Length: 344
Image: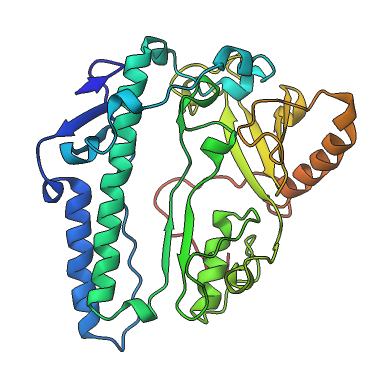
């Protein structure tokens, strides 16, 4: 077992090459349970079904059978270079997801962590394969929509960061694969940015379910039919900084002085534009046409002033659209309550 902080496993970097085989691990058990449910669904084909299968890996701790670790020799694992130079033009808020515990990481530990992360991904991928194979074996694949995604991306050393809670591409971007029989073409890729808010309206249209009129997402069905369709053309990501004891990061955020503020990032086909505290805590602009690793912040360069102004206006309009008509963050009700998703 490797870990950077003794006694902590779930929220910090920790890993374990297990001698046990797949079926002894939580995700192996989840795949088995999903297969069991699908077998019963196949007995009643007249009934529609919705099955959400949540896999834990590659969330920390990176625990997977030893056989998956063997796929990624530790000595071959890359270590991100040039971090100090990269960080010079990044606002402090942009790096505030860093945890001081990560100061203990040596290059050897970084290689071990990356090996374990990759092993965990491959282990999880095998469990997904088991579920998909069950669909095919049971004759359900031709009439079942499959969505594969995650709740966030992940850093493995880029910009000196690990894990999540940044607004860089590595953290903000998630995998999104959709298989819709009779609609999608195998191997096709839609390049335009989309959001997870788009999943519900997409599934509603594919399943011929009338959606509520107030949804913020777009249906991706036109893009599934023709990947060249641009759709909305942007995606919005938000993180929190500051907030004292209620902060979202383990390490106190640099520069927040305990005050809570937001960072928003707008991703278009070419640009990523980020504002921290409406620009008061800094701005970032990255040209994905020339800088896909987001190493050069162009936000303060005079030749990009017009681009910053245009994207800032677009970002603020997008943020405004996430609020109700009052413009106020809805108050969280106390006690137990059931959300009304049909007539909110």
